[in-house]
Length: 219
Length: 292
Image (cartoon, rainbow over all chains, first blue to last red):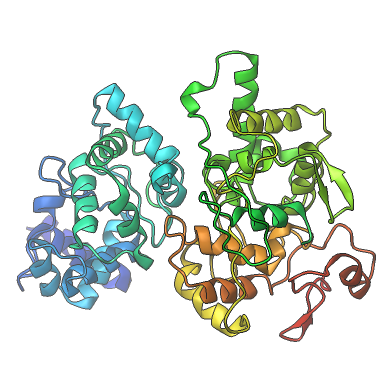
């Protein structure tokens, strides 16, 4: 049909004009939706269409995280410094360029609508104390001392820790404790995680998952 | 010893058992002390003043901004709201004042000592002794010291003094230590990190840091603080040598002028800097203290 032809023509012209950045973004969007046909499955299957993650599955939010941080994580999955049986083969199937493109894409995505998860008030208060004051009797600094006020993160090394599920936060602290995750700069999180008790991990994870996602990672 | 903090440091080296670990320090027992829990702050005017003091201490930029001339907060050098042992806790200082200080050749009250913090470490103006801010800070320190014996040497007061470095502290080695352990938070130019007007990681040198009169510009003081407390949550992981080297590196950069500046760097150095510091020295072709 003529109309379709014109539309295609317009689309083609537009495509020819868009800069390389946008083409890269198309590649990223394709991988997110369909995978890369090289073994990397569709990101959205676990991380959601909006990049908001999946709380029940413990899959993290990616949308709005810092680009350098995301790149570093994918490279860490690949190298095994972040030892994760699901993500390792996916990261290995991604090229360096694809990793860069995905990181740029997710960093630029709008913050997803993630509702505060709620929780037992006493547990939330305990978690709040750790997040805002720390537990210096046990050498534990406040989360927000490095991850900034409200856990918004400080690019590039200190990621946002709000807008993540309690399951994800808990799993990461466990991974630092066990050494499965060993990609933190100068071992800061390994040091902190090692000092957190199981009760404290539960409290702080619950608290962080209950914080409104008002601001994303500091760019 | 240039000031009372340094004296407190030396005394702090004594352990509970009374075993002296620093040569030349008198034998005495250091008392173990635990400050009260925040939950016990009373709900009355005294309690409200304590809380105000804690607010000023944690967020000096906001609660005492008219007295602050840089980007620092008290808590940057006195970790955990002034509670943490080996990080010059307020409870360690409170019981040791009034005390004689060679820095001004006088007996100073705690209030006067805190005025010094504002003048030098905060590169600002001293709040009056009877100002609401000073009353709140002293009240907070008093409450934190509840139950501590007056005049006692408390274990964890001051910063634990480091033994002399095995090798002469070195700027170049310090630069490497800095890049590997400090830069992630404090930045490549020591500028720290300020987000939405809030200092998340304090600047260590430059125009927004403490001035040349602050106790921390002394390398022995800085090395002691760094060894015991840095990187944050990983205190005592650097070697003594690394602490000396990185303190030398950090304190060999320019910072705001000493408020006691006489108009001449060499003269100011002679008069006020007979200590372990780089003020007035030429580092990388520039006289420190000479560019402002």
